[in-house]
Length: 214
Image (cartoon, rainbow, N blue to C red):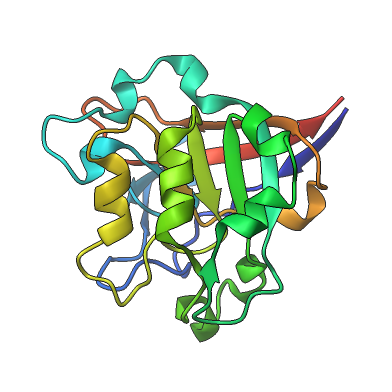
């Protein structure tokens, strides 16, 4: 079995969404004093490779812990859009290139090649985003989730989070951000999991996203 880790490590100096505090690691117990090591971690629920549920935007909508556990596992397909330039839109023709495969996928994962910019100022640049037609395609489908190797479904400049709001208003789906290594997943369907922490009333959670091939 071949397994690919699609998750960025959580570190004190990692990129975070503008206005968000970086994770803080505080020693709680030590080998010398207590005979074991334990660390207190303080971070936002939308840190690193993480997942948004509808409750991220709407009070009373579905939280992560309200989804059935099989929401977070299934078949995925990577849509390669690395050829797009900054500021361009991801259009439906990018999905149509894959024929019938997108309709068989539980997760559509968009590879912009942006993970290569992780840890640099360029990561916060004007990455391509899905257009209205692609968002409609996703909302009209039976997908469990969508994912990106960028820091947001919306551009950083969009403080109104227009795409997030439209996606989550009525659709029970998850959105994954800050993926990596999507270029290693090929151009066919593969096994994929993205389990969040089981947090009560969760508006979001870091995940461990993994692709595997039998």
